Image 1 (cartoon, rainbow, N blue to C red):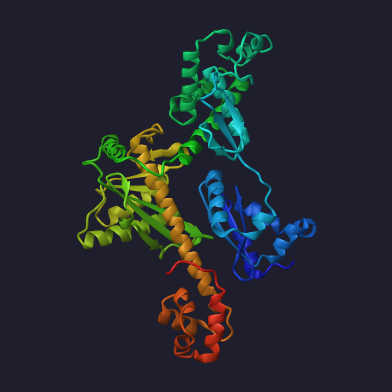
Image 2 (cartoon, one colour):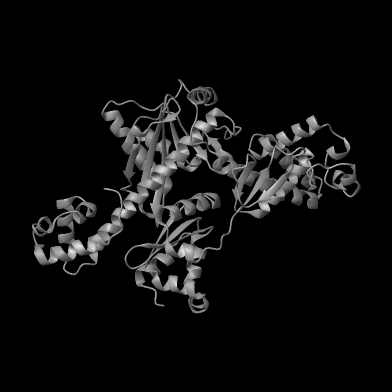
Length: 494
C-alpha cells in the first residue's frame, strides 16, 4: 500500500493528545472511527510497514481503502470514549462493524435491593435499578478505588446473597480487609446500610474530603521516611482523584430544575463575591482540526438554564495553529466589542472552558476593550476546579453543589457546541475540496462558484443551467461539477 503525500503530511502532524480519528475512503465516506490516548502513536501505528504487511485481511482491506484522515482532539480518555460512540452512531462506518472487538469498559455496580449490598465490577450497564459508577477506561483505577472504598466503609467482599455465621467461618475479610462483618452482627443492618450509602456518595464525588485525607496521610508517611506506605497511598490517591474527576464530568446532568438553577446562580454570587446575581452567564470553548480551522462556541444561560437563542459561533481568524488561549482572546474580544458598540446586555459572569492560562487570556482581552470589570472564571477539567485567578486557590465544590452543576452543564454545552461548529466547518471544507479535484477548475472559477451559490451545499442542488450560467463554466464543465459535488459528503446548509 502506498500512502499519498497528503495523508503522509497529516500523519506527521498528528498531535500527542487524546481524541478520535476518522478514516475516509476516496469518495470521502467515513469507513472507520477509532479513539486513542495519543492520536500520534495510535494512528501512525496503522501505517508502519510491518502493520501493512502482517495485518489480518480485514484490517489490511481497510487500510488499503484509506485516502484521507481527520481527527478530533478532546480533553481525556473518557471524552474520547464518548465521542467515539457518538461518531459511530452518527456515521455507522462499515469497518467498525467488521473490526469490532466488543470491548467494554469497567464500571462499578452497587445494587441497593440486596439485603446486604456490596460493590462489584461489570462491563454492561443494565436498566435494573442498580447504581452504576463509570464506565472508566482504566481498570486499574477502578480496582484500586473499589478496594479503597470497601476498606474505608467496611463493605463486605464475600459473594453469598445473605452472609451468615457459616460464611464468616471461612472468611478473614473482617481482619484483612476491615469488613464490618454484618454476617455475625458486628454491625446492625441499619448501620451497614448507612455505610453502603456513604460509599455510594463517595463514588458519586460527594465526599471529596476523603481524598484530601488520603493525601495528608501519604505526606505523613513520606515525612516519616516510610516510603513504601507513602508510595502505596500515592497510587491510591492518584486513582481516587482520577475516578472522582471522571465521575464528576460523566454524570453532568442534561437538565436542572428551575429552582435548582436559580439556587445555583445565587450560590455563585456568594462564592465568587459577584456584585449581583449572574442572571446571564456566557461560556466559551474552542475546537480545531489538525491545529487549523479553529472555531469558538459561545453558549449562554439565563437564570441558570441554557438559552439556545443566544448561542453564537466564531471562526477564528487571527490565530495560527492550536493555540486555545489566543483563540479564546479573539472570540472574547470580538463578542464583547460588538455587544458594547451596539449597547447590548453584558453577562453577569463569563465562563471559560479551561484553566488559569485560558482565563488570563480572556481577561486580558476584556481589559483591552475596557470591559475588565466583567467577572470571569475558568472551569478546569482536573477535579472540576473553579479557577478565579485572584490570588486565591481554585474552588473545589462538591458534585451535588447547584453552583457547580450550573457551570458544568454550561461548560459541557459549550464543548458540544464548539465541536458542532468545528464539524460544520469541516464538512464545508470537505465539500469545497470536491471542486479542487475537477479538471478545469482553478482558484478563480472555484471562487466564482462559491460566490454565486454561497456554498457547495447549494451548488449541489442547483440546476445544470444555473451552474452553466456562471462566467467561465459552460454546460460541459457544469456537468462535471454537479457530478463531483453530488458525491461529496452531505452536511448542514452552511
